[in-house]
Every structure is written in structure tokens, then in C-alpha cells.
Image (cartoon, rainbow, N blue to C red):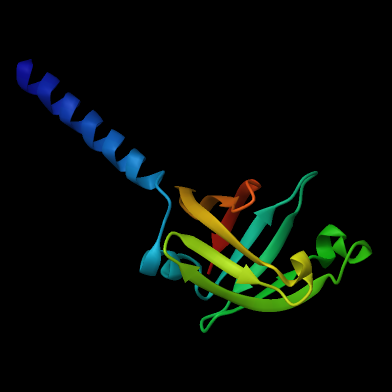
Length: 129
């Protein structure tokens, strides 16, 4: 009985440790590996997704036509992306007035992340590819 209790306690401790590690922001080479060559689908208010394609070599393409962004600004654009420590950064020619934006990325499950932009905005996304 004591051995079973100890084994159960160790299992719970391992699961708690794995859960804590999964909720830490990704950084450096692991962050590059997470997004390079992948499509990240940002969840948008009122449903739908905004796809971003992070190409190897530092180009990122965004396409907001399916979520109706063409009414507000250029619906498609290609910018640059890079990793700066614990942050995924991107710069678009016209989106965000050409300013650099950086994000912390935290895995929340298989193919799922949460992000927080340097201005405090945050959201959820899924990754494919």
C-alpha cells in the first residue's frame, strides 16, 4: 500500500512538472523550431482565424481576407520575422504602421499556443505544418 501511494505521488509530481514546463514561454532555437516553416492561425474575435505563414529564412506572410480585414487595411502582406531571446518578433511594411512587434509564445497543448504582444495584447492560436 505504501509503495502504491509513493508511486502515485511520484506520478503526480512528474505530471505537475511536465505541466509547468509546458506552460513556460518558448525561447531561442526552440522558438525558431516551433514556427519556422509553419502556419500559425490566430483566433480572432467573433470566430474565424487569421493565418500567418512563417517561412524559413525570416519571411512571414499574413492573409486577412477570410476575416474581412480588407475593409480596414491591406488584407495580405509579407514582412520579416526573427527571434530575440524569448520573443518572436515581426515587422510588416504597412501593418502596425511598420513598427516592430514582439511576442512571448507559450505552448498550451499539442499544436496550440497562447501569445502576449509587447503592448500587453494577448490571444490564442494553433500551429500546423
